[in-house]
Image (cartoon, rainbow, N blue to C red; front, side, top):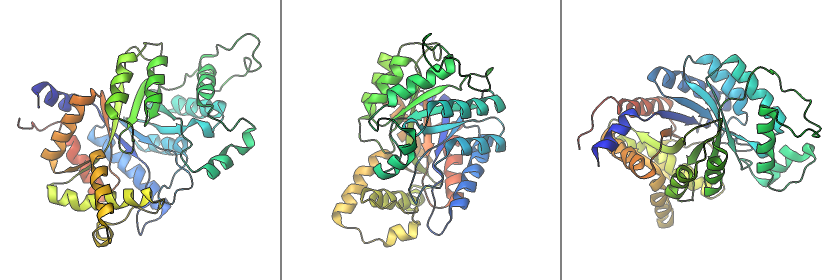
Length: 347
């Protein structure tokens, strides 16, 4: 570990991603309210931004509407940036996305982020239901939609384009900063090419994290939106006062990932349910592999893991997601992670 890396951990922005997970024994409304409560907490703790996601037809995720949730969170907080992590652009007309996020930016200037994803965030049938009234080619048209969204912002339509006289209200507000989200190399390359921020979803990605993060930085082209690269690394982190307690809490993460790999997207299980589950040797091997994407431990262990990621990926910002069952333990995990920036870690 180098001293420069340790200094980076003390100064790098820390942010939060929360998916409004429904927990075992809980309800969807409780999950939504817990997301807003968590946002209030991390706002007071000094986290940089708070993002919410878009997923559909998943019993474990209460919200498929990041724009609605962002508005509620902005109203409930004071200073933290709030945004979509992300809006799944294939599901939406770009004009509608532009309208909604310009309204948010008008109401909360300088506090909104517009993160965009290429995947539908759901299964094929639900994706079809989301898009069936749009009367367009069902193929991958993400790039076309992204170009259109940016044109709604700039207004630089070709002179003969039928949309050039349509105004996106409010007309005197620009879109908030754009971010491309990715779990592969595609969004990294595209974000670099068009000069916007990039966020890599290491918490579930199969693609090599170093390839995505470093290729984005190497290929970045400055734009009128962003003059230098800004890469966010999203990580699953479970931090507790001791390594042993963190391992107990992370049983929820292990079992949830195992079930999702089998197509079971049910609520986040309790640690007790995870401890009682009849794991096979293949299950345990799967969970050990998945732990490569999850930092679990007490403050010293988590700090060392975060420093390693900063050193290897050159991330400009870390975005933490903590998909455990108990809200109080989740809140404490974020408190402990943020405190790492105030307490020197021994080399």
